[in-house]
Structures are given as structure tokens and as C-alpha cells.
Image 1 (cartoon, rainbow, N blue to C red):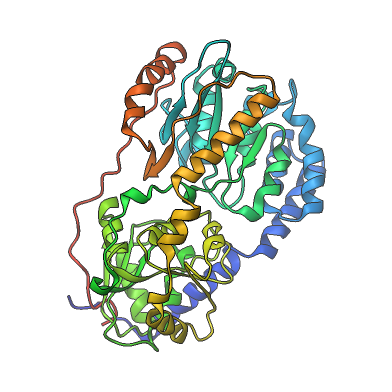
Image 2: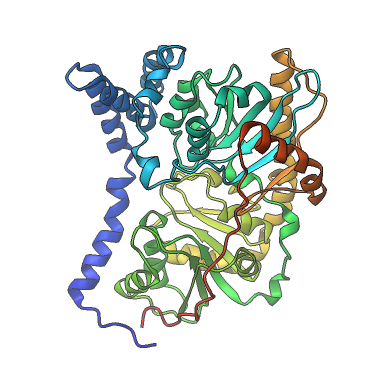
Length: 460
């Protein structure tokens, strides 16, 4: 396939934009500045109260400073108690994003949701796992939330790097018990305390729910891909670091990039970026392939890369570990799954000398044992036991009945029961949820586009 003509100026512009995007969008200092300016906006009685309260939530989301978080918790606490908490829903504070670009809260059904336990006798509560903020807001907007929380504990997972206090504020007043929310980074546990007691953070990330049985591990001496990178085409994934490093690496490497379009960026933008950085190698770009195909490529690769600077937990590195593929991540990256990089699973790398470091990593790949470590530490079985313990201990401490444990949970693009028998066992509970409360758990299946042809010679 002939490459589009790319001028010197085009290449310079692409390189400049790639290298500097994260310095602005993901800069911690800028985030703290936004938090301070938002707090000032909240404090000054100039704007309507609804806008000032929206600014307060922005300040909560953008700061990491413990001192400022304690102050914000003090300011927010009275607004999370009845009847003051009604202000959030009465004025739809912070919901514009959810009405349009993220999740569409005008829909009633709950997606990415799974019943883990049906309510039992003597008031024993059931457990509903419902990931992502827009589902909780749908629950508040379209259903009798108080009736739901009288019969169920809600467990969720944050969709981004930092907690979303808009969703937390709208949940206030609906439940006498906390809503149990999984984190995206172990370093941010204290951030959830700003919304306590409405929210209780659960020390589990999205990358902690992988079922090792989903991976068929290919012998290392039979693998055909040198480098795989599973990351959508968003700029925050920093593919450019790989392209820059490839200039000093062997020209015969086989490299496969797997992802999907996002924020207006397509595989053509990725190919243009590779050309701009002078990549010599042939790169295969696979767009919107099936989950099974992703796993197959992860298990056919010698090493795996993730170069994001700031995002949530990011599942791809841990998936690679279960495929017995060691992982390289950036030392400066603020990504939850970076906590699992160690002497058995992979390496943390710097931009300086990255090409040389990756070449050495390829040579030493046989010395790592990522699957062995992952099996011992981060399977869906471990996580289900941890979640069950959190819920059981809370119920017993609160004087609630707890005689039945939750069904083990895993993620296969969406949450699913580990054991198929639990689908059948809990089906009456799912129907009861629909018939008594009108809450439908929408079964959603990922339907990838038809497999595109392999796009090779990306930089030529």
C-alpha cells in the first residue's frame, strides 16, 4: 500500500503535537491549578449556586493534595446529607457530560452490570455489580433508588483515573449503606474519602478481574510477534514513544498495534505519526478486532508495551501477563496496573535510551515469569474473594444478615460470572430485579467490525 506523501513540515507538526500533548492535558501541576481556581470560583458568591457547586466538584476531582482534600471534604460533607443533598438532582449539577458524550443517562437499562447475589430471607441484601458512573446515574434518574438500596448493596468501578464526584454527589441520600466503588490506582485510595460516608473505596482495580482460563499460552519459542501494543489510538497512549524508539532498533522486527478509533484519531493518523518519527520497520495495525483475537496476539508476542502517561487501571498489561508475555511500561506513567510491574512481570522504562532498553528487554524476555506471578496474585478468583470479604465484613459490622457469598466475577469485556452455573442460579434474581423495581440488566456484547486487512509498511 503506497504511503501518502508527507512533507517535512507535516512531519515536524505531527512530532511536535505528539510530544507536547501530554505536557498540557495530563500535567499534574495544571490539574492542581485548576483545582485551586475552581475552589476560588466556589468560594466567591458571584455565580449562581449551582455553578459554584459544580466548581466544588471539579476541585475535588482535580486535586491530589491531602491538605486540600481534607478541606474539600469538610465543605462537601454537609451537602451529602439529607435534605441538603437534594440540590444535586434538583439542579442536575454536573450532568451535561452524561446527557451527551458519556453513557447517555437518558436510557433506563443498566449496562456492564451483573447480579452477584439475590436478596435473601430476614432482610439479607443482594449485591449488584454495576460498573461506571453513568449506570449509577441512570439508577438515580429513572428508578426508585431508595427502594433498590433497601434490598441491595451496589458495587461499582471508576471509569477514569480519578473519582467522579458528580456521580457520588447524586448518589447521596439514596442509601443508608455506602456504595462500594473500585479504584483505578492504589495511590488514590484517599481521594475517595472526600465523598465518605456515601462512598467506600474498594482496593480493587478493573485489571484485577481477569480469568486466567481465557488465555491459551503459546510456547515462547513458537511466538512470531516481537512487540505488541494493545492501546486505542488516543494521544494519551503515547504510541509516539515507541515510534521514536524504533529508529534505533532492528529493522526486521515484527510489530503489531491493536486498538480502535477515538477522539477523531484513526489508524491513518497512527501511520502518519510513524512516518513522522522515521520508523523503518513494518508495522501491522489491527483496528476493532475481537477480544479473542486480541488474546491470541498477546499470546503470540515476545513482549508487550503500554506507554500511557495518565489513565485508569488499564487492563491490557495484566492481560499480557496472563498470556505469559512480559510488559514494559513507562516509569513516569500514572497508570494503576503499573503497580504490578516487578522482576517477574516486566520493566519500567525511561524515554532516554528507550530503543536500547527495549532491545535488551527482548533479548532477556525468557527470564521473566509474568503468568506465574499473575496466577499467584491478581486473578478474578483472588478479587472475588477480596470483594466478598469487604461486603461480608461491612454487613456483619452494620448488624445485617450475611449467610450467602457472592458469585465469583470476572471481566470478559463486560462483567460476567466466572461459573456459567451462576447465570442459571441467579436468573430468577435478575427477573425479580426487573419485575419489582423495573431495573433491566441489559446484555451487551462487543461486536467488532469486520477484520480489516493488515496494514503493513506503516512508515514507508
